[in-house]
Image (cartoon, rainbow, N blue to C red):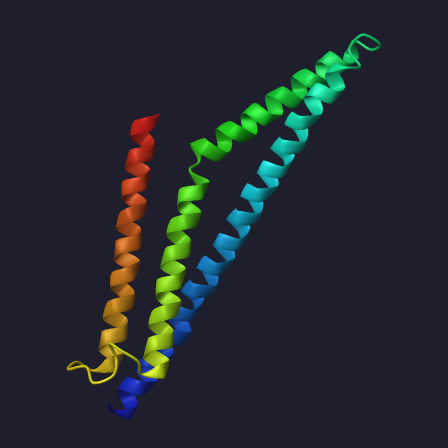
Length: 150
């Protein structure tokens, strides 16, 4: 391996791989948080409806609150299933794990990077770009399936 190729792979890791790992990690955390928050809000609102219904006789305005809670839970349920957030989180989590694994294998000179016939730097780039391409193709397939379900 030449000094030039070592420098290039460091740039690739610094400018391409690490930012992608950071971006995916932040995206997964954000979507998981939002999904969990939506589920908690839905649970609280749904479970409060029967409790509030016991007060309807003394205050008819509670019917409006109950209706509002029912509408909000329906909207939350629709948005979480319509947007396919769970599938996106799963696919991004898988890609994140694969990218982290490739980086660790490369840095630790583990298989497939130990004793490979190709230059290890080239192999890393090829494998990472293949992971990205497969992920993008899977995202497109999910979008198409999602459109067909509409």
